[in-house]
Amino acid sequence: MPESEGAAQSETGAAATVPAVELSGITKRFPGVVANHDVNLRVRPGTVHAVVGENGAGKSTLMKTLYGMHKPDEGTITLNGEQVVLHSPADAIARGVGMVHQHFMLADNLTVLENVVLGAEPRRWGGFGLNRAAARTKIREIGKQYGLEVDPDEMVERLGVGDRQRVEIIKVLYRGARILVLDEPTAVLVPQEVDALFEALAVLKGQGLSIIFISHKLDEVRSVADDITVMRRGTTVATADPKTVSSRELAELMVGSELPSPQTSDSTVTDRPVLELSGINLIDGARHLLRDVTLTIHAGEVLGLAGVEGNGQAELVESIMGMRSVDSGTIKLTGDDITSWSTRRRREAGCGYIPEDRHRHGLILDAPLWENRILGHQSRKPNVRGPLVDRAGARTDTERIVREYDVRTPSIDVLANSLSGGNQQKLIVGREMSGNPKLLIAAHPTRGVDIGAQTAIWDLLRTARAEGLAVLLISADLDELIGLSDSLTVILRGELVAEVDPSTVTPEQLGSAMTGAGEAA
Ligand SMILES: Nc1ncnc2c1ncn2[C@@H]1O[C@H](COP(=O)(O)OP(=O)(O)OP(=O)(O)O)[C@@H](O)[C@H]1O
Image (cartoon, rainbow, N blue to C red; front, side, top):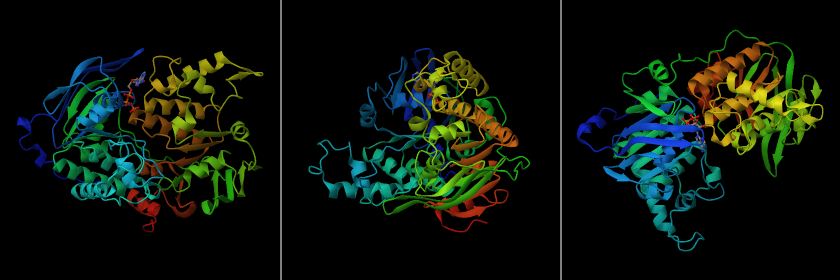
């Protein structure tokens, strides 16, 4: 973990300075939920300020209020000493507040320059009216000034995750932001990219910008933040000094529970193959999305697949689940050749699936929780009785998931989009673990989930594994990947390029293997 550079200097004269951001008494209600209640947050200029809290604590709601997406029911927003009312993100941007969302919002088929300028130009976008030379110069200047260099003429689709994030940050700086909100910026990065991001943040704050940073990774928060504000159940409950607080103390402030550890317990791997892939190829035009992928996962085994996002993981998962047809090769589930089976048949045969993109594949956001319980499981108990949907059965089982997985919700009748991100994830995990699957494809199972729920999900995976579940685990959290996996394979450009021993490999070595930069031990 990098040291937070300049943490000491930023304190000079802090007492006298006007806060860059001061939120006082913010309350925001949604039907049936008070998402923020009397929240107070004070961010010193030229600092990185972390906001931590368990899922549903109200962090995103607060940030959306600061970014003009929500109007608070009560309370005030003061920026650099001036009280403001923000009606929209455009308003927030005009006041120097920029937000980088966790899901990047770039257009792949445009260049860096076009993406940065898109929406910032007063004239209609259409190629003319845009002074490319001036924009290019400005992007290069921003890159140099803040250590965020990216080629303005590169196509975004050719950039890796770390560079895409830089483009998002440059986009915000291009619009003149002096206050940056970063929502879980490290969730998708490998350790080297995290280091690079933190270096950039140190430069930004050195130039007087303020950064508000939401994260569930407490070690990271302690290394990069100058101040920490803890939220619990909709309100700010404490501030902490990252130089003295421990991760355990922070966790206790958040949830009152002990820090989890993803260490694997004794091996439960059997010699009974559950999933066997042999010679899988998936070709799109001239591109090999998957090349000759062969692997076996046994009952009781967690096989971790490490890779930088976009190297074929999504395609592999979709091939296993029957959402894509492979061009050659075979897929077997407990000995049956399922290569040509439909997704539904594969699910019925015991494949559980926690998808990477919970909004696209995991949930119907404008349906209530109990209907989401049925999604993908419409032909199985407890959701059907005979040929009919069993509404009562689905509802009762949704109640069970809400209880067992600690999904924070006022009821099972609320729409899925009213749950916080982490609670949506818990609902999906609960659903996919129902009905005792033989194989679980778990793509980022704890992404966006707080440490309390993370421990619970890890425990559940371990228990199910001990009972014979085979798991294909994909995660950008390398500690999770190393800690939970019995075997670990690296995927790069659609090929399985290395096997590493999870009991000896370090996150740094794994990160290098993932980028093809060097050999893992
Ligand atoms: N648009 C909405 N409608 C109704 N309720 C909402 C809405 N947005 C958020 N909530 C509720 O407000 C509460 C706070 O949610 P919020 O997304 O701010 O939490 P969070 O701390 O960001 O959580 P996470 O770490 O899971 O992202 C939750 O109970 C959530 O269900």
